[in-house]
Length: 399
Image (cartoon, rainbow, N blue to C red):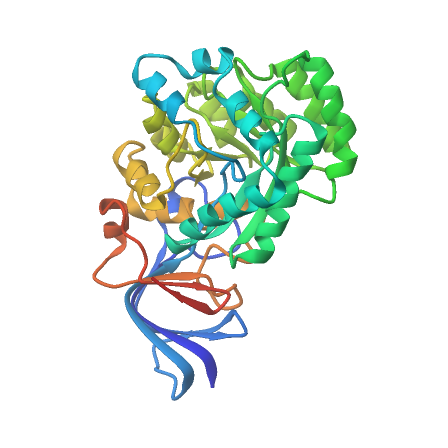
């Protein structure tokens, strides 16, 4: 007798434990009238034969894997409404940043917040995302910009991981902006000295390599040191301007290059011929009224493409996974099947969790979303749709 059986009138899932590239993104499994048996939080069987007994039984019109948001800037403290109004008034992201707003405003707010204030503020955000279907989530430091407050952010993530059912992955992104009063080289030297301290506190290192942040030379020097110390690393690449960061990510063997709004055909070719994952975040383009990453060119060139929200208080104040998927179809010209793979298995692969989550298969963790009155296309069409039930490690959470 299983702990839980879920009857799926329709089940859509990518399959396997490796990221999908190119045309593979659309090759998902579609099963009808199947029963998903769950024992001790793991999928034990998927069958067309209804099990004779179960402790709990659920049924839904549509079942898909839990969403994996592989790029957010949780934890932060407070919002940046004034930045938003300045942007609608014609100021650019870079103008706001260089005038002392932007990231620096979030830094000031985070430094003033206590650990308990940060935990309470971000707990609500994580719980909101979870109810909307995000069962695995990446969070970053990067609003501290000094030793004490970068470590404080990582501590918040550790606490949140124990307070919520969500699987949380931690990234050290001290290289989010240059701390006031320091040069790039001075600040990066401080971060290098922190690497040994954060080694046991995070899963990845990330750098914002762009105009107004870190240049190619300093980024390369820093990441080579991180690589020598055994870190896996990612890059915010070619978001504001084309700097060559995508090419650098590929040459260094980065796990992912994220954003890619300003990449060229040469960059598309380079990342498509590599194992570096292209993480696209259309909500950022929407929020900044900027160009969108060339998703179709990347997919048609055989790249590995994942989706993330970039949820943060400045450039992507979007806490709505259905909107990310909607924009991926409408603006990135991805199909609903490609979107599902990019926001589940491929995004899990960015976080090195593809053997554990991202698909609905025997042996995988039982993370899934149950919808009624919906099909796969509905998820990318109906902005604001939420699952009727979220299942995380076999536990049931009803909306």
